[in-house]
Length: 175
View 1 (cartoon, rainbow, N blue to C red):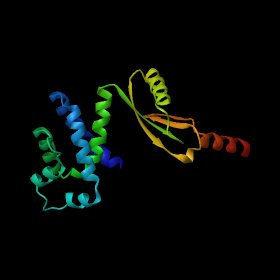
View 2: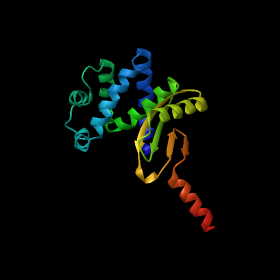
View 3: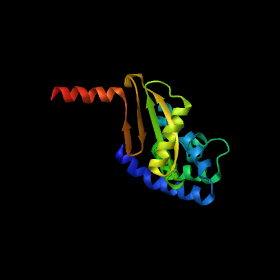
View 4: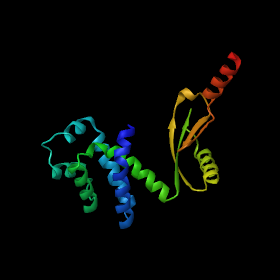
């Protein structure tokens, strides 16, 4: 995985520079989302490595409808360098670069039950105060947490789940 990220990083930076210069980071983001989903499909993965797949065919397969010529040219470069399999990693790194440039923190809130909108708003406001940036929240439900929530915001993980509190209590009692 780390080798894939190392290989993908220069491509992601180049793509971001092109998209940012054109003022089309959001469009490229959407195009990368599509291309990464297609490239991650197991049926497509075997096809991408096939020597008879032409560059033009690969670009047509991976380009969403309405994608810019620049994005198609970028895919063509990836195809020429046999790096199409890196599209999921490139897309992820592109999103990180975009979030950094737009000063956005992406947070994932995993809770035992679906959280009400008011609670999500208060979590978002607290994270905005903590990081000094806008916050985009993605939610998930994991019933094994029993109660509470786990907030994952990049390098910061706040584990307020009942499951982890019980684990800490069990560990303390065992020692």
